[in-house]
Image 1 (tube, rainbow, N blue to C red):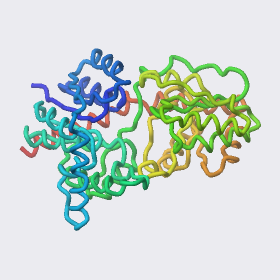
Image 2: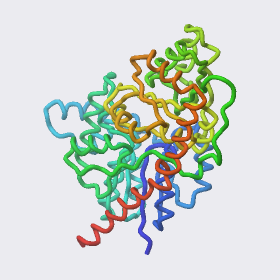
Image 3: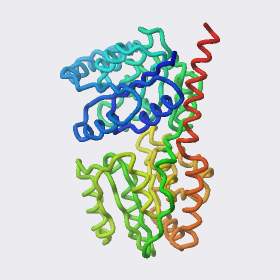
Image 4: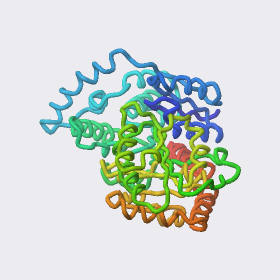
Length: 412
């Protein structure tokens, strides 16, 4: 019989390409795969419908529970009181206090019999753990971020991060399969919880998404590009816009993502105040499978992570690898994670300090000559095809899952 894997995530399908890649890889390797995902964001529902109709594995979608918010609000003071006296907060209570669809995910996961349950994000951990206990199955976790290091000092963050740590500390040692989206994230988990270092599975994309050929450079100057689901003011874009006003080379910037909070408007206003308002353009959200193609039309891609949280210091986002697969050089801020990666990228990347717009401007001017940009783009194109793609990276995931099953067979 085929082994069965159930992937559990509190996100919408369209908002989590990592889940889609994982499910595709496991299905392609011969596993019977079910994904449990939430149906929470109305704007993504049509995209989720399209994904669910086209994938070869099973999809279970969980609607929002009417009592979810109330349960979280009631759990928070109780969990805080337990933590205040120095006692261990039970993981179920901690998960409810943290928030998210814990109860709904748990109910659905426990209804599905599988040999391995893989959780994504904190709210899915108790659900996958409960299902694994019920069905005497293996448990896995994919750390897309260092979740207990996501606090930014905002009100309530201290309690939320303590709840995350309570969940992770109670459940992660039971995991037979552990992966992380960046080396420093895996190392941080190992150090905090005394577990083995999770294997790194980078946020790369399939070669099938790559353009057939590199886009030709058009006109003078440099076309810079940044994308995310939501435009924010903590993503390093202000420093880049300040640098644009200092360059000798005309630089334009396309910013793609939801402007629901008006942060994109604030960035355009900043550009106007610097006399370059016409060079910054806001673009609408686009489906994840279009990101590589859209990035390929630009000259440089931006991965300007700030150090607003411990997680941001440690993460390697999918932006970097989207640009490489598109054959586009990357401007990266010098966070510890990106600083470690930079030597491997060589001429395909430039590492800059967000505290020094003048140095960013110098880096941009250094890339502007045709020969310099051609060398960087060629390096990015080569790295995307030879190293940083899902066709290669999925072997790490499949090896980890196979090893988990092998260990169980040997032990039993």
